[in-house]
Image (cartoon, rainbow, N blue to C red; front, side, top):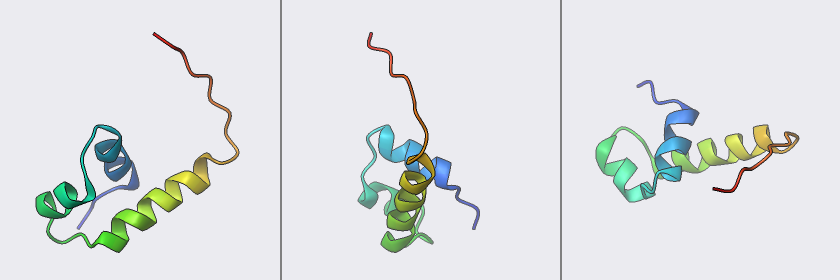
Amino acid sequence: MRITVGMIVGQIAAGATPEQLLADYPYLEREDITQALRYAAWRAEEREITLSYA
């Protein structure tokens, strides 16, 4: 099993639901998705990102 935090966050950002991820990757558990999102949020806490509006 090699699913990265970036892949999970990217899929969620693209509109996938946790249910879709669980169906596409049956070896994932809901807690895996929750922990990936928590980790990504923790890593992003101290970063300033300039958002551009199109």
